[in-house]
Amino acid sequence: MNFALILFCLLIASGAIWIADLFVFSKHRSPDAKDPWWVEYGASFFPVILIVFVLRSFIVEPFKIPSGSMIPTLQVGDFILVNKFTYGIRIPVINKKIISINQPQRGDVMVFRYPEDPSLDYIKRVVGVPGDKIEYQNKRLTINGKPVEMHRIDDYLHPERLYYSRQFVEKMNGFEYRVLNDQDAPAFIPDVAQFPHRGNCLYNNSGVICTVPEGHYFMMGDNRDNSRDSRFWGFVPEENIVGKAFFIWLNFGDLKRIGSFR
Image 1: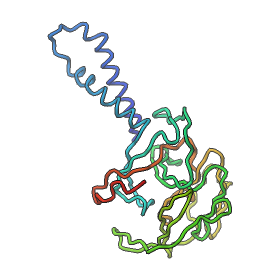
Image 2: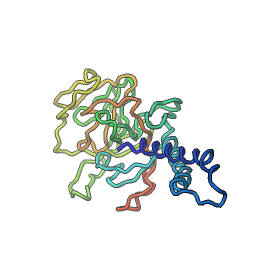
Image 3: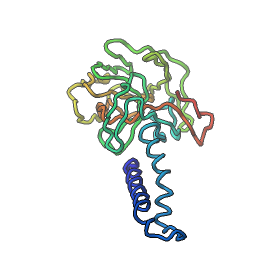
Image 4: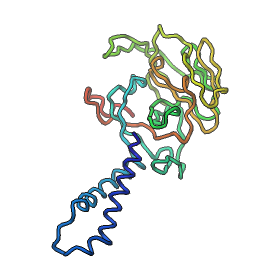
């Protein structure tokens, strides 16, 4: 469901009713006559819808985390806020950038439209920017020939499924975050799609090596062996970017998580 399109249509419809009543219909009603129900509702909803539309389109948008691909950084059921202007101002609905502000940086947690189905929003971590050579070999991430700094910490217990994953702290672009690996999961990437710029990637038994094309980004989930990401379906084009995730504002199952994400 394209909520942005639905909200835009409601904005146009309620705005048209408000304008039509202001300049046409109200002039044909007696001063003491009650407004028709469709005018009353349309005119009263218009400013509310306008405010929501502006906030959601240009400033901040809420999302709910549907899967465990970003564990332990983000949990299933987290409600997060996404900054819509960090990477530039875009025209709502068509998502075309009109003002450029910043570019995604390695380490950012970014929401984007899934390249194989743009009606779906995905969230992953940026590990490769245009021109980068990304190597994920034997579950070790290397960028432009330099291994990403990492060290192992205590294993992570998945509370829902009651099993442990190996847990590491990676350091990228000046900040740290945790990632998970399952020791019994294979290093090779199965079921790879035939995505655009597929020739930029080399797959082997140890994983994948890719060169990120211009205008695209390489995304990975922090739950490395339980995330379908750029290793499987390719690069995220710049026009698919939605915004940068920065804050957990609610989790009904664990209120202590509120505010725990940068």
